[in-house]
Image 1 (cartoon, rainbow, N blue to C red):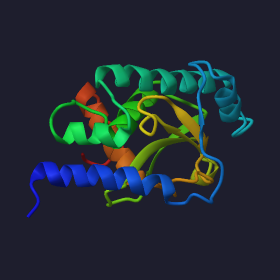
Image 2 (image 1 turned 135 degrees about the horizontal axis):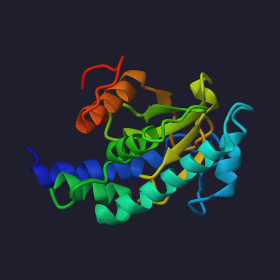
Image 3 (image 1 turned 90 degrees about the horizontal axis):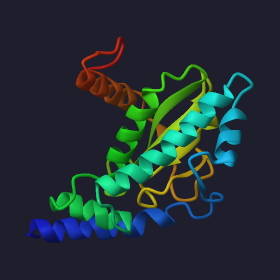
Image 4 (image 1 turned 60 degrees about the horizontal axis):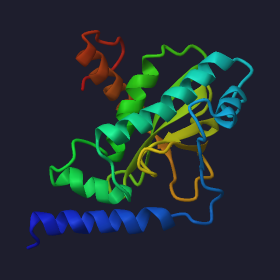
Length: 200
């Protein structure tokens, strides 16, 4: 029977090897955000629908970019991300697992009280060693498939973004119950329970 460190190292290696090649023929990879005011990301968010406010798009781009940078410092993130996962499981880092990046970003974006944009919890390879979670942004009442993914985990705090469908490395599906659970958990921590959210 493998020891815990051996199992953790095996998990790290499987994660590192499996994810990048899963759907290599699907489309172009998401691109890096170039700054907290990335004009391409802001423009793409505005282009989701005529109803999307330019100021909200700029706020989302800013928060997504700065969240990754701040958490990378706070969690002492190292490259590659699978190695950070290993360090977290060993108790040597406080955070840096993909769902932690997504949960932190969700909480910060939710605090913006967006009116024209909607937040979605997305997952790929759910329930496997290669499971990955990101936040997807759509226009209000727009289908998940039209969304833009925001991913801080893949490049250790450097934000990448792109269409939710077309990502060559992952096939994204929406998990609405997980979104509600995460929002409820954030609200409880802040002392303001949300209506309609499921229990954590």
